[in-house]
Length: 65
Image (cartoon, rainbow, N blue to C red; front, side, top):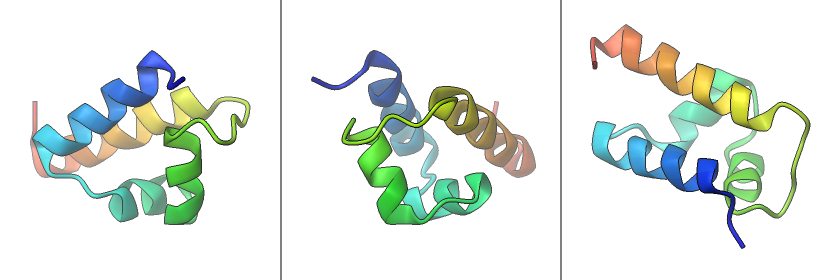
């Protein structure tokens, strides 16, 4: 079962047109690893915080509220 936060991240990526590759690069992960995290195949410590912070930075850089 997917964690609620992963669905929120994926939804926000979709609505803001941020790709997994862009998010993974901002976090410092491989895009395939990010996919495993978002699909709850792996659960690294601090993953939610890293994903949310990276998403916020990308949105801020693009001027997205």
